[in-house]
Length: 232
Image (cartoon, rainbow, N blue to C red; front, side, top):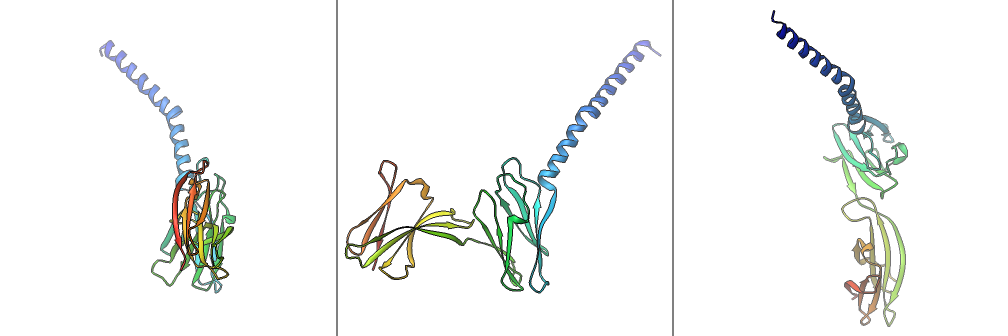
């Protein structure tokens, strides 16, 4: 056999041997670590809560899928037979447990599920096994803080300002509502301002006994937006 061919063959074996050793020693551990990390973050499932109806006939479970990364949200899935709803819980990166869930059964068929996190409003899910879609998110009012009451010049009409906290949903969970109506009555009509953090303050000016203007102000008292309220 040609000596040069033997030398070349030996060199190739050495190169392939070094490459195989590199893959085994360096690349494989990296792939294993990445695979483990990907499984923990995205695929691993942990049952956090199993809830039974009062008659014990209806059961659904809440499952965490993967784990939060750094301070990101945790993904959860609520299952009932072949139906499910997926939600995210912002919990400042902390591990979820059963304390992040609360279930109030209103009958053997219906329940309200509350999902809570350190960096979000409550997320409210309505469950009704008699409906084609058993899970439905609901945005409900959680808190209303009265900030101010303003009376018309003749004091027969009033505007009541409230800061409203909503559960998670289509609207931003913090807003201002300006309820209006006859003085002393139960106020039902209102105008509302979403994302009111854009403004520094507001001012109510009565034009007459039935008409008022609300000005939303900057820190320099510049009017950024306004709305008119007419009370019959």
